Amino acid sequence: MWAILIVLGIFVGIPVVVGLLLTAAVVWYNKSKTAAAEKALAQGGHGTSFVREMASMPGGEGVLQCIQCGTCVASCPNSYEMQHPPRRIIAMVRAGMRKEVLASNAMWYCASCYLCTARCPRGVKVTDLMYALKQVAYRHGFRYGPTGAPVMYRNFVDSVNRNGRVHELGMMMGYYLGSKPLAMLKMGFIGLKLMARGRSPLKAHTIKDKEQLAAIIAKARSLEAARAKEEVSA
Amino acid sequence: MKYLYFPGCSLDASAVAYDLSIKATAGELGIDLKELEDWNCCGSSPYSSVDELLACCVSARNLAIAEKQKELALVTACSACYRTLGKTNELLKRYPQLKGEVDEALAAGGLEYHGGVRVRHLAEVLLNDVGPHAIAAKVQKKLDGLKVAVYYGCQLVRPRGEFDDPELPQSLDRLVDSLGAKAVPFPLKSRCCGGSLIISDEGVALGLIKKLLDSASFNGAECIITICPLCQTNLDVYQGRVNSKFKTHYEIPVLFFTQLVGLALGKGTRELGIDKGMVSAEKLLTRYR
View 1: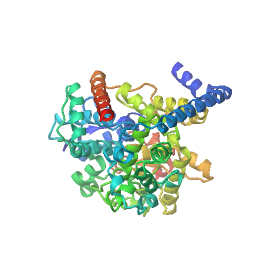
View 2 (view 1 turned 120 degrees about the horizontal axis):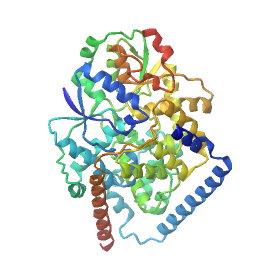
View 3 (view 1 turned 30 degrees about the horizontal axis):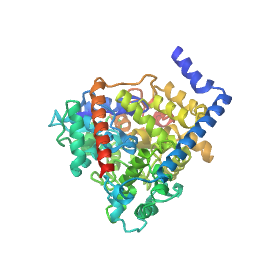
View 4 (view 1 turned 135 degrees about the vertical axis):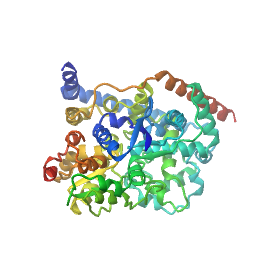
């Protein structure tokens, strides 16, 4: 019972004023982080060329194969939302426009429906290329903007790293707190309806062998750090 | 027929009805599901949006555990799990450097993986291993005349279309017909529901969901069936949001395909978790009591 009351308080009880203030603070924080990432990117010193960097990633080889026909753009359900639709993004990668590509919202609007990949006459894995772009943008510090997606992904990944499984409720709350706290009020009703139907457990489900997963992740991280060092020195 | 079962995180939460209906029907169809020991999240699209190597390692932990029971295929009912686990297999085969790093990381957890696990979707198992004829023979209550829009979504059929046509799949329509119901024409059956954009960019996803509801309704569907937990959540939980945003009045129940199969096998609505839907299917189903 008390748990329901607490959640009620969290979802609907937060006064709108606090929500507004929090939203302003979060928006400001996210913007300043994005600006810092852009600034760092503009300073250069990335070692290898952008095309080479992308082409060396799984799925990124596509930047070299594309014939600029535009089938991907015509197939994409969300290309109209993208500052640069897929065909143009590929052209921009080839032109070495690292900052413009990574700071754009394009790849964050990819919903992984794979229609572009299924249709591409050159066999470019456009969806995987979008993943590669997201990874590089994330690595360069674009963890906050220019859409809500990076913050949501970060909360999802944190949830997996912590519990071994995604806790949907915790992930959603983390996401809304870190991007648009005011929207939590709106979402509260949906959350309560889901809870009433037993579709949103309060407690996170965890795996038994968390240490094993943690050891695997730690090792992967250290391998990654070593690889990054090598690349810079090369 | 014995399989390893990978439920995935959603089937513990927002799609708990999917899990209920699978457990209620599998046995009767001769499908013996053994839950994968201590499985973890497949990583889904968020993890590989952040870091490829880590995403592969997290996903490969499941495959490594599954490989210990070599003869069994790993079956999941979630399209995202199906795609993600399958993609990990593909990546490890294509990229030796990545494979080397994943091997090293898995070894840190005392695991190894040699690429021997076949990842399958439950829908495909039902169609190919059980088959519409065998299912039809088990039907207790024919769902005569129920008009169904079969929604395949994206990640079951794409990118490669190893299971069915990547744009206009037909196979599950036959399954629906074998239950006595009627699969209506549904041109958008494999179009995107917006996926996780419903969280990060609701407006964009609502537009996509509306198109699906428009198409299903235009073709006379009385309900939609899905094979993916996220598709079900988007179409069911957010249907009210579509209505308020676009001034529409949709009230189309969205069921998991296993719930429809369960109904035809004579199972109760509670047992199948049908009461967990946001859009009630009660009115529709009184016809079949």
